[in-house]
Length: 338
Ligand SMILES: [Zn+2]
Figure 1: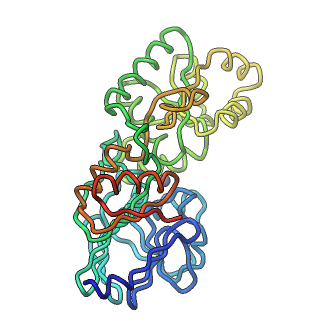
Figure 2: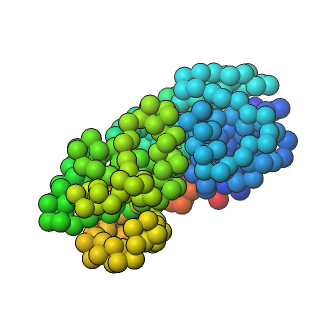
Figure 3: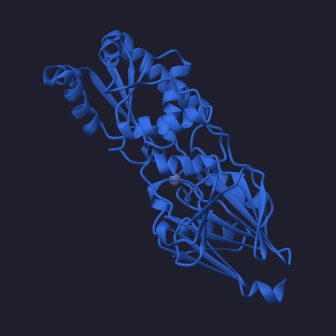
């Protein structure tokens, strides 16, 4: 492998990564003119320039979510399932669950000389209410995200965080208040809805952006029984006691004003208690709430890399430099992509 290893090129490109190896030319999570794109998931920071790609490969979960959020695919597009392998010129591509959001995918590449590459995209190794955790596989080269790649980011056990969220919601509702949980409209909002609903708490979705994505989750078999803020049932739910899941509290309040009237909005503002659902709540005072993350924390990033057992790791996203340093200390050869 040594001679050909030299010709592997992995560089940052826009919102993603550009990989070339011999005749194989692939993009991950970015569009490059004349190049196929392997799309890991539909978050906006991973789909830049997609209109340039000549071929977009994604799971149905990712493609449906991308389209529901207004994305367009002009190029040829192919669907791939978890566990499925498809052949391209000079490479076999296998899709694996990344545990981050609906359809989120890690891609394993196997080249003709048997060299293997694993690209994680954004990933989470811990099971959430609606996503199963990512499972590592061995590879010669690992390209991994490093969002929480410093030792200060160690998340508590997820089920404990779930319990805290539910305890808070139940207490507030009992006191006549309305808990509002702020979460990204793709992924975390759906986990919050499922968590609350499974515990018997009525949930209002505060933004159409959440409705759109939740409907895709439901079409993919996830049970998310929520009430849209713009539906006729919202007023009754707010009166009887419920939680709101919101991707943008400002727009949620404006939606409430439009649907139910300004005086109602003012009353609700007084009754509302806001919490963020985010890993960053662990470290940022202004970001108060519960550390529910769709990403892998530092100890699990290191553990994942150890299990993949690669010859080299390329780290991307914020904290790539820090994570590379720590992996190198653990005896894993790692470099940041910057
Ligand atoms: Zn993401």
